[in-house]
Length: 182
Image: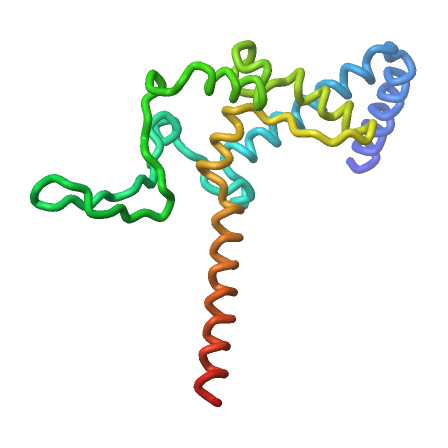
């Protein structure tokens, strides 16, 4: 029984060797493209499911369309006069129609020249950025849309801000402690 099993394996290996010598020239590039595509799709899947929480919390589409903004709180007196404003970030919401057209044109001209010709990611800009990077000319390639999302949902910024506040608080506590010892 074992002899029969090993003879079949030997036969299979011989036929496999015969077929590999008869392979066409295009089999290797096609296999490479298929494997590269599979690896790319697996990487996209890992990004989509947020594998090991590497990419932070991904915002939902509704959060992107209707973002939470920290605007200033205004305090009014009984007669309707504003007494003061309280804020973490001094923002006042404005409608697109309220913005001067020259401001919009200036923003687009300086930040994203191809704003009207891409879907949120400027592929041509990314490739030219890589080309310039290899030449030693470092520049950014993010679009206005990418910058907006990064600023709205940057996990790293929050972590750095939290650590700097903790360090500041620690230094302040040490300073107060030194004063109380003297």
